[in-house]
Length: 244
Ligand SMILES: CC(C)(COP(=O)(O)OP(=O)(O)OC[C@H]1O[C@@H](n2cnc3c(N)ncnc32)[C@H](O)[C@@H]1OP(=O)(O)O)[C@@H](O)C(=O)NCCC(=O)NCCS
Image 1 (cartoon, rainbow, N blue to C red):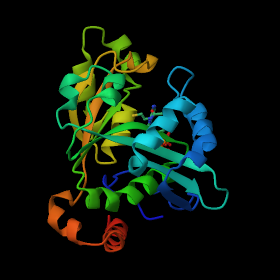
Image 2: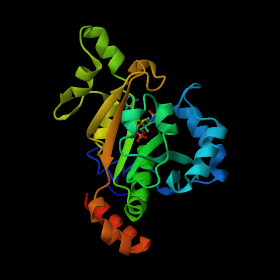
Image 3: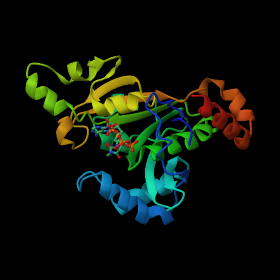
């Protein structure tokens, strides 16, 4: 695996030396048992998607449902489900459920990350790298996601007169203090769009969710990607990823 992510060229350290060799692809119904195992590992009983939820996503958005697998064991390491949204969907959505249920646009350049789950960083890197050429070919420009802020509850205990806005603006050495915002920042999700209270049940975030936006690199060159066959686009992005 090359240094890091795609759309979201990563500032995070390389995991290449210890990383299992990873293969990413679109998910199918056959992946359901593996998806349920990963959900159970990474989310609690309230948060985890049910088998019906997962099947619905696979059926609704087959070209936006991606998974990364360990090449030697076949284990699912990471999954990412997305859906198209209007560019201003976040103005009308109060919670994660609202984002997931927001009207499906006839045409749009924006995606919302319904769910990202990972048990190994190389899985997320492989997913992003895999999806990059597909995103360019399909004309996707922005990817939004709602991030927990797991450091918020602890911070607020020591700063009782401060607000969630104060917390998410906190940076150290130019990167967010919150570990999960920092994680996404390193993957190119640097734009904080807004904070939603009661976004998703998440105790350490006091249920807040921060809507972040990442821009698909090189997506402004849309006419070029439209003309270029997928295999050539893949060759270009594979080459560029090694230089990041
Ligand atoms: C967030 C997630 C997808 C990242 O997966 P990953 O690429 O395999 O990376 P890791 O889990 O090893 O986390 C990498 C770093 O990000 C930071 N981080 C990310 N999420 C964090 C969280 N919830 N709490 C604390 N630190 C977090 C940590 O600093 C970690 O650093 P470390 O290597 O020193 O532990 C994965 O942790 C996950 O599935 N979490 C549960 C579900 C979730 O929160 N999904 C995202 C919702 S938007």
